[in-house]
Length: 595
Image (cartoon, rainbow, N blue to C red; front, side, top):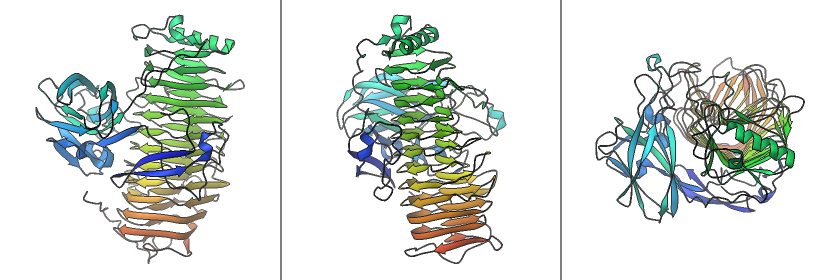
């Protein structure tokens, strides 16, 4: 990903199965400061998501003689966890998926699932790879980090039932391939797994490794081992300590360095040769700021990867990729996988900028701004297959305020929401693309929940695109909206402005109110295109204003609202397709498009 962003960005996003281009003017994105919160004009932009450097190709659209599974949105079903709720399974020798490249690339990230081992510990198996008919080194696929069972917080015991979290990813650098080249994944006699389910592949042109800055401190000079054979934790920490005291950049050269505990950082810069080249990997790896009276500030981390070894969810384990308190800091061009949370920061802190990060395959959240985080931003980042919320602000104890999540792409959270705001003040969710919520959550959520400080000030949800979001809440036993509001702990009285969003193909209702009293919510210029059930599902008292909200393709009714629910809908001008007589009765089984 790029280190900076120009004033005009060409954004490529997936919308209703079609790839198209959107040109957006974003003048403030060239400003690196973490304090710039009015980066977008909420009245001028359409949803764009992250400016991703790769092309994403779906297996079901590729040439194949395998079995296309899906479309399916039922929890515990394999296809339900695939992008677009479809994938291709290779179960017999000679079956393949073959992608034709639309542009020159030299790398591939494959999203896949293979069966678990009988004891729940996972298995590892090769899969054959061919480029233009020439066999390449096999890919090594594993189910070690996938397949969870039982009830929250889940476990690795198949006898507990409720299997989920089926998919993982592998990345590989390849030789240069031209547009039109054919990349084939094939189950050969050497492919020992019973089956291989291919979801998608991301193809990217990865640049050559970056060079070390002049006068930097190179971790290999401190004894760090780029082969990963020797534990490099002590060497890396010593380099970081010297980097802080000497005011020099700490350089991570190409290699995979074993790190087995937290690297503590403060007032220091750590850079790598690129996230595809410089990797910190190990059981216990994490880069953490100090907490307390002397918490960390002025930390700059960029251009390397953090790969953990987390195979289950333990909420008491401090196994996040990046953690602690990081004031006035920048996290950029990082890649984080197989940790508990990708980035979990604890406030009070201010001025954190997270830009161009990729977080994949965690057992809990992607990013969480936890208690008292302010004037901080996550932007131009891609989050996929998290074990909880993709992006979250959680105002536990102290309010998060004046933060923004903008221009991000969040796909396939395996639990909860793509993006969530739990309490806080004056926070914004703007111009994100969120897709394929799986269960117990929606695309974008605002709630007074989990002992959060109540919503206050103005919360803004604007110019987001939500595709196949919302899900079934197996505990509450009702559908969750693509955009939903939950006053669980207290009445929600802070102002919420929901404008210029598009909701496509929501799995249940498009918009939901649930819990205690919810007021001061205004919807303006939102489009709903296809729902599994309703336009609105109202399960709370309160009131909301709707202007220029249009809906088509509602499979049940415009509004679900029962007698006795004291909720006032003030319908202004420009509404259509949903503002009908409320329906109350057994909630219907959702209906989805056939493609």
